[in-house]
Length: 331
Image 1 (cartoon, rainbow, N blue to C red):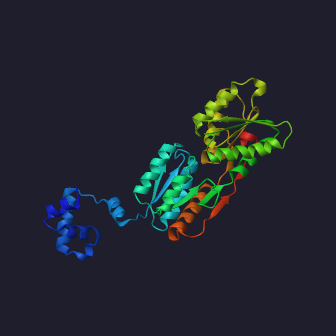
Image 2: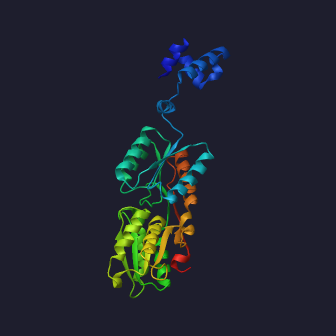
Image 3: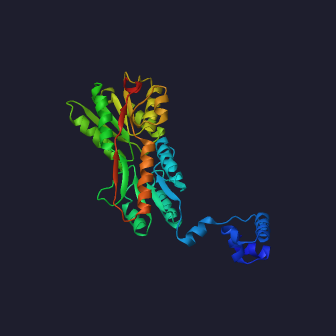
């Protein structure tokens, strides 16, 4: 149903219906009441998206995250949403699910909707696509990943430092056979956390680090990874596991517990993100804390600055992670 249909049913011009919808002060009270009654009777719903497309603008902001099921990204999005709400801008959230094809679908959709800005936690090499969006007038800020070359403003947590902190904590507890579980390996966050752990392990004589790539970053991947490690000969099994996020760590914890492995006496576990579930696990989980809502608030601030001044300076913000020690590593 269109505005033309409403106009025909009400016996008025299309312009009058448009005024009723957008500029009611220009319509007489009697006409306003009559047209509004017809709209209600027909069940007409205005197409705001089409109106915004015709105007060439949309106050909404789009955001594409890696995994909306991960509470980390939920908290980041909450930080974004609260900041945008203060200036009257709605947030539209898309979940790539770590799938490059789905990520491209959302980027295309948001471009078609003429959103005023985009926040993206990229799956892989998406920079060429982001350049096209920027060149066509869409403000873009990258979230939870560094971008070299001062092309885009970004906010990220120092994952290299975070990986080093996690591994160093395990080493300081006397562990020498470490395993790192996480993936897919092409995710920049996984690469940096692994490299940070490698640097810490390399500085300790006799310490080793096994990298076990997981296909995803959820509890199921953690369980499968732990089962694969338990299938190794006893002398090759790790005595400590660094999981690339807390969901993977919780899956590892579940698999070890079911197998009768004591945590942390037999195997210590540390996660990453410090989501709320980490502290409330059956064995409270040590983790590397990321300032999740602050990350979202800074991302919104950077994006609003780009919207207000598209030619303004690129800003690069790196936040620091912190260690939270709980029972899973003997805390």
